[in-house]
Length: 119
Image 1: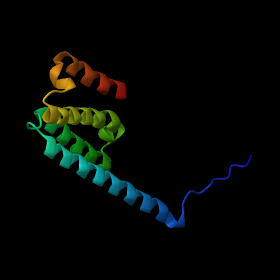
Image 2: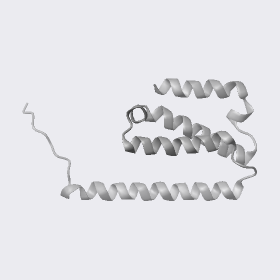
Image 3: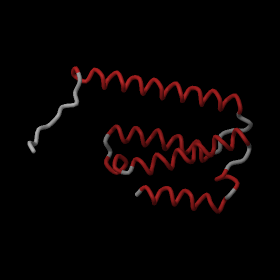
Image 4: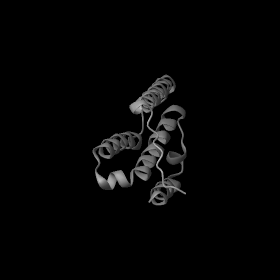
């Protein structure tokens, strides 16, 4: 049972670079489609907590790529909490009602639960 390492590098990482570019292109295309759909079907402005979630999401991503340790270590619960806030505010702006906005008691429970479960 030799301890031989298998290298997964293909042509100096060309394949992985192409796949990363493809993944980024698909992500940006999907985001563009969702943003266009939001502006076409929007009935009201984005709620404050949605804007706060978006700002926090962008800030967290910058801090993760900068390697700031507390944020880099706990990035998943931080980012998912931001996604929940942003998605709920988007639904509220498009439909006029949403889960977090309509159920004030559940809002705190959901946010607390999603944050604590991630840690």
